[in-house]
Length: 266
Image (cartoon, rainbow, N blue to C red):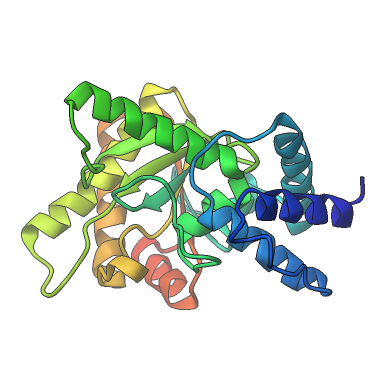
């Protein structure tokens, strides 16, 4: 099966899951087809899927991952002992775990082709990621006896499926509606600390952080970066477990902020 054949199969499968989607036409251009597939995956609720779909989806996503190019820790910039900086797409990183800035439902972003990190990670990982997240939330609901949103500042771990990383750590950062409070800052630090502690509990050796709570959650970028760096540095001083940390940024402005905070290590 060629990559184009896989793409068309996946689109048709997802269209045929709902009568409301069957009228969608498959675009002629490959880039438009890829965007349509991502949109259909984004809006798909966590429900059973055929083994044939998963097999073809996995082959498709792994080929796409290979085409983008995989980045290992050694390909990133060492800026301090045990701390690295890399600018680019977090779904390319081959580390033990990448951190996802999740929402409180913990099911990924349902907005078609949205630009958030949550959407990017779920789109590249495949539909299995949403299914596993759903099982985590269902289990949490059964234990508590009622539906409960994922608390801010905590972390959950899942497999990474078709990402080059082994795991995804999902954490919900604080949403800023006005002035940043002390509680907001503490909760953001909790996100980083919870992910580091969870990674250590699973004996992971490398973890890549995105810029948690910036962007859609409106935490000021520079202040968020200072909290991120301080929390990681404190953790590494207190825990000599060899856990390597990659700060992953996408925007040029964030790269400059982290570069200034961390300097360079020769």
